[in-house]
Image 1 (cartoon, protein in one colour):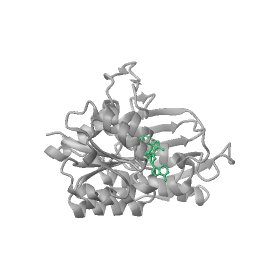
Image 2 (tube, rainbow, N blue to C red):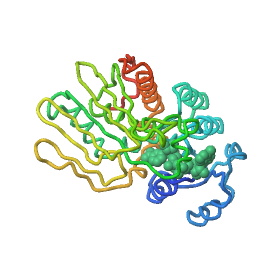
Image 3 (cartoon, rainbow, N blue to C red):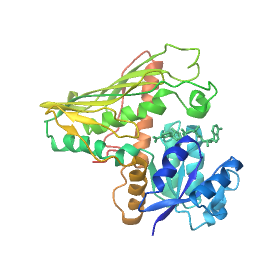
Image 4 (cartoon, rainbow, N blue to C red):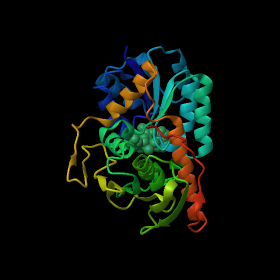
Length: 340
Ligand code: NAD
């Protein structure tokens, strides 16, 4: 049986990526919607053949508990709303996918994880790259030591963001933070899968060329992560630059993805002059099928809640380092959130 997914929040990511991805999924399908905008209901119902019984708003959402057609709730709202809706979904007995960043604080991540554990439902974070073959090829090169041990990783995750200065991403109370929480999490993710390890400390710096536009949220952040055995990782994230890549330096060579963090097609190559190349598939389709398979068969949860929480711990450490003038902040993560 295909599992039924309900999308909460029908903004640009749901409309542009998730719903189209769900047209081709094998293990799940778009069964329902939760929206605060009545005008979207009709259009989505007819476009995706969704029955009225599977349409909710933010007020009557909790009634979804009684709806057997919905197995998974996917929360695609502004970051500060993730915790509330993930917890309500868990209490309704539904499995949960929470978009990235998982929440706006580590405390909220803990509350989501606890709610899911208490309810006995599965939880995953919208880290689509964890289901992408390019990411998994880098993970394979690291694990197999094809080019020896990793010594250095660098990842840029940035785009130039303009337009409505009132958008939620520039409003700290809705976003929880700027470039770091939006794009920086991709750089954190790729530093970690590019080394196969969690960082043991981080030091960070913040920059701004347009402080009047980015007045409430971080525009540009750089950070240096120290990993075990002297391995070093570099992070660059910005809402005011175009950069989208991962570079992994091994003892005997290197591998690169550029672009690395967008919806694809991605591209990569290694120091041997070989292209890293896979047929392009919707990352969102792969991601949602991976989670549905995890629920149905107990296969690996490739982006568990602990992974989202770990990344939020690193984000909080980066903000702490910036507040403290670039001080190195130690991290004690062990293997938290590492999925081989
Ligand atoms: P968006 O602004 O396009 O959509 C947000 C949705 O939330 C809209 O439907 C809006 O009506 C609704 N909403 C409810 N209350 C709101 C409020 N108080 N203010 C603003 N909107 C409100 O945003 P998006 O790009 O779809 O992002 C939604 C989430 O998805 C974010 O957490 C974002 O980080 C994540 N996202 C992930 C990826 C990815 O590649 N994994 C890509 C884009 C967005």
